Image (cartoon, rainbow, N blue to C red; front, side):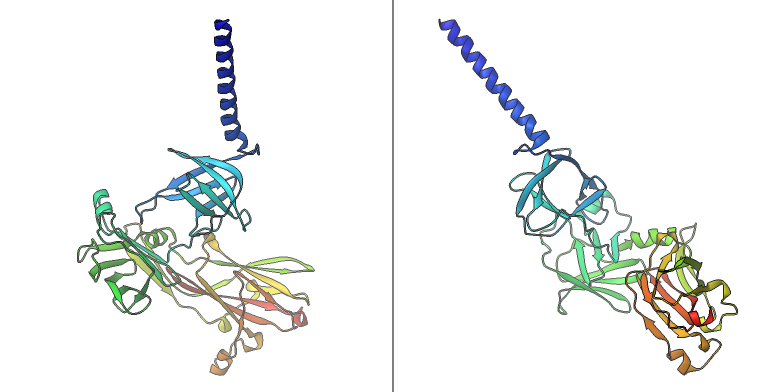
Length: 371
């Protein structure tokens, strides 16, 4: 009888273990509520400007980036992602569509992830010719953003914790890092377009006087793009096939790095848009309706800023200052502009600016009166 009880106990324990195992397997595949979970990827990429790698969540064709958000209302669990040390549970974020997700490693470790990529730096200066030990023990980098904010990557060995928001200002020969007011915390000498050197600080930065920081991102651009991009203009109208042409490239100023690693550049002067010899190859035809002009730059290298203006084509050939000032500015949304056919012909000028320089372009649009 005693043996029967022992066998029964063993059977019950085995059943309990099997049930527990099945429950664990069910979580991995179907979540705590039996909902089918999506397997995602958690990847980490080196960022030379900072001490920690950039964390990214990959879900199909979508990439999610760490977002600075305190709202962590946990919604429905939808997936999981495994890295080298742990498994992250992926939840929807309450109050948001799936452009935001919540990645949870534990109750104390979580990240809000967003499909909106973080802002690219305007400048990112990294300690020049530094060893791995120096990148860890010294002030590693100075990063500037287009909104005027700045970030200093101070060594984890520093006794001073950089906190709060910092801003930057360029003078003729200095880069100043400061609070929102005029309270300067660090000064750097501007050596050239992509190099600064540490001068002094009012906080204990682990940087030696005279040590240089290089904007490697700008250097990479200068190595890759040795000429200002060309411009293709597309005109889309409801009742006409799409028209495409290559705009005339006019005055250009450009910097690049040659095969020997030397910084160089060129300047090319040209006639103004009103004084070109021939417009036939750069003319688009309207069809009596509104149309959309799309500006596409070669090498998939869009400029930082674009401005567009136009003159009535009757102004062509004029050297009058008043005529030059009579241009009409055209509103641009991204790389597109809406135009209406009022029957007149117009000469357009596009001014595009990159970090490496700028270039002017010209094309003509004829109205229905001359078709």
